Structure formats: structure tokens, C-alpha cells
Image (cartoon, rainbow, N blue to C red; front, top):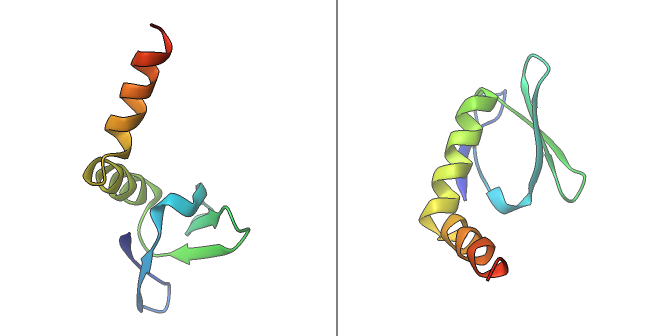
Amino acid sequence: MIALTRLNGKSLILNAILIELIEETPDTMITLTTGKKITVLEKAEVVVSLVRTYMQDIGSVRATIQSRDTEGS
């Protein structure tokens, strides 16, 4: 889960695993796998960094790398 800020200044906690697309239009709009769209104050680069850190924290990145390593064997 990552902490973000809506345009009205209210905080929200988002399940980063559900993020499908992040785009700046110029506000940062996040599209979830459910089709829901959320606009936040943070720049796309910040959201990507938060997602990357979260994935590393839960071990998702490590599991993906290990999976790729075993596929070639």
C-alpha cells in the first residue's frame, strides 16, 4: 500500500498492486485494473518510486527475478 494525496488535499492509501497505468495530464492520473481512475497531487515519477519501494518491501521484485532465473534453466 502506498500513501498519496488527492487533489483536494485529503490523504489516501492505495493498493499499489492494482495500478495499471500512471499518466500526467498535467495532473497525475492513476488507472487501476478495476477501471477506476484516481487523480493525485504527486508527480508520476514519485508514484512510480513509491510503487517500486513497496514492491521491493513485499518481495515482489525478488520473486519476479527468481522466477525469470528459473525459467531459463
